[in-house]
Amino acid sequence: MRIGIRLFAVCSCALFFAASFLFESIAQRRSAEFSHRTREHKRIDCATCHKVPTANWIAARGYPDVADYPGHASCVSCHRSDFFRGNRPAICATCHVSSGPRAAERFPFPVSSRSREFSTVFPHNVHQDLIASKVNKRDVAVAHFVPASFKMSAVDDKPQFNNCAICHQTTAEMPKFANRIPAGTLNALGDTVGDNFTPLAAFFKNEPSSHASCFNCHYQNVEPTRTDCASCHRLTSPFFETNTTERYSLKFNHQDKDHVNKDCTTCHVRITQNADLRSMRDADVPILTCSTSSCHGGEIKAEIAKREESIAAKQPAFQCTYCHAPAVGRFQIPPSHQAR
Amino acid sequence: MTKFILLQKLPALIVLSLRLCVSAVILVTVGTAQVAQSLGSLEVSGRVKIDGKQEKLTRKRFYLIRGGLADHKQLIERLANAAIEPRDCFYSRMNASPEFICWLKTEDCQSPYCRDITEEDIARVPEFRAAFDKGTKQFRGRRAIAADWLTTNLPENLASGFYLQRRHITETLLGDVKPLQSSMTDTVTVKAIFIDIPLTTGTAAEKFLVTNILPIEFGGKSYLWACEVEIGAAKPASLRLLVPDGNKPVKNCEVWVRDLPVCSTGPCNNK
Image (tube, rainbow over all chains, first blue to last red):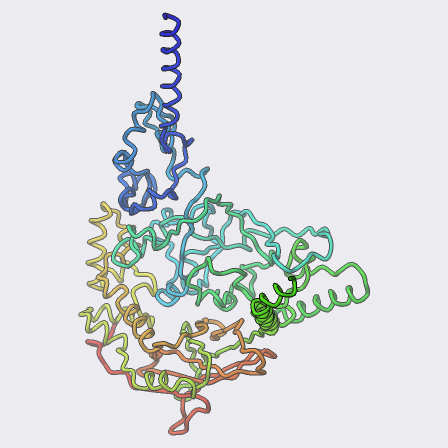
C-alpha cells in the first residue's frame, strides 16, 4: 500500500513537472527574439507599444527618435503570466541583458545582431517633385544627422545636385562592397581572370539608415508622420542587413571630374519616377546613359567587338573590364548592351 | 465492349483535345509575344526658346502616354480648359506673408523644402520665425534641431499644401488615362529620358503623347505641352519642345501659353 502511495506521489510530481512544459507560452519558450510577425502582434497598432520620441532621445540619438524598447505595460496586458514564470523568466531576455527581476540593463535598441523584420518604402518620385532642389545642410547639428555606418567627409564639396545629397553622400570610409553578379539567363563565359583593380571610397555613395533623414520633414504635420510607422515600414521575412554595396560596374567613380559635374538624375534616369525602391529589379542607371554619349560610347563599342571577335575565333571569351571587374565582365553581354 | 466505351467517351475526348489545342495556341502566342516585345526610348529636351532666348526648363516632370493626340481628345480638352492656380496665388490664398512668397520666388521654389532655410531667412520670414520658436520649445531648447526640422512646425498648407493640390489636379486631369512613365528634366543636360518603353508587337514605330500636365511657370507665363511623338525600337526618339511663333502652330503639338495672374502682395527686395 505504501509503495503504491509513493509511486502515485512520484508520478504526480513527474506529471506536474511535465505539464509545466506543456503550458509554457510562446513567449516563454522562445530564446530571446521578439517577433512582429505573430498573428497577435500584427493586430496591434505600432504606436500602442512604440512611443515617439522615447524619454531617452537626447542621450541616445541627439534628435527625437524611437530610441528605446516599449515599456513593460506594452507586454504585460497579454504576457502577464510570463513575467512570473520562474526565477529567470525567458521573456526578460527580449530586452534585458540578463533575466530576473533585478536585472535592469538592456541591450542597445535596436539589437543589431538580431534579424530585421521590416523593409523600408521610399518613394523617390514624390521627393523629387517636392524637394527637387534642396541642397545639403552642413552647418546645423550635423553630427546628429550623419547617416549611420559611414563617416561623412569633406569629399562631397560643390556642386550638390538637387536633393540627392541630403541622403546620399560620398564617405571617407571605405564601405563593404561586392560585385553584383548578373542573375538569370546570362552565363559566365570563363573563370575570373586576375585584375588588380580596387575601388576607392570616393566611388561610392552611402544611404540613410536612421530616422534622422526622414523625421526632419515628417516628424509632424506632413504625412506620413512619426507615429505612422506602417507607411514606411513593411513587414517582411526576417533578414540580416549586410551593409554591402553591390555594383555591376564596380569601376564607376562618382567623384571622377567628368562625373561629379553631372546631375545625379542625368544617369539615374529611373529614379525620378520610382515610387518604391523595392520594385526596382535592376540597376537604375541604364547603359544608354553611358554608351550614347561621346564619353564612353567608343570604349564600350570596342569591348563588345573584342568579345564578339574572341568568340568567333573560338578563343577564350574577352572579358569586359572597362566598366566591370572580371567577376562581372566574364558574363555574356546582356541584351540591353547589344541594343544600346 | 471497348469500342462502346470509346464511343461513349468520344464527346469528352473531343472537348479535352480542343482544350489542349486552345491552351497550346495561347502558350505559343504568349511565348512569341514575349520574344517579340521590343523596347524604345525617348529623350525630351527641356531647352526651349522663349522670347528669342534659349531657356532651360530644369527639374520639370513630363508624362509619357501611349497613343497620339487623336487618341486622347478628352485629355487634350481637359488640359485646354484647365484653370490651374499659380504658385503665388495659392500661397496668397493661404495667407502667406509677402516675405514667405518672396522667399519662394527668390530661387523659383514651389515649397519650403526647396532649399535650406538660413538664419537670415528665419529672422526675415514671419512663418519661419514662428516655426523656429515653436520647435525650440518642443525640442527642449535645441535650436539646431528647431532650425533643421523647421518645416515640421510650419502650417501644413504652407509646407505641403501646394504640392498636394498639384498632385490632385494631375490626377483629375489624367482621369482614366494611365501614363506609362514619367520623367524629370535634369539640370545639366536638361533632358527627361524615358527608357524601356514597351512597344506594341508588330509595329515599327508607335505614337505616344508627351505632356507636362501641369503648366510650367516661367517669366510671368505658364507653358503646357501635349506633343505627339513616334517611338520605335531601332533608335532612340527625341522631342524638342517648341513655343508657337506668333499664330503659327507647332507641328504635332498642342501648346498653351498663358499669362500668369499677378497675386503676390508686393515687390520682393530680399536676395
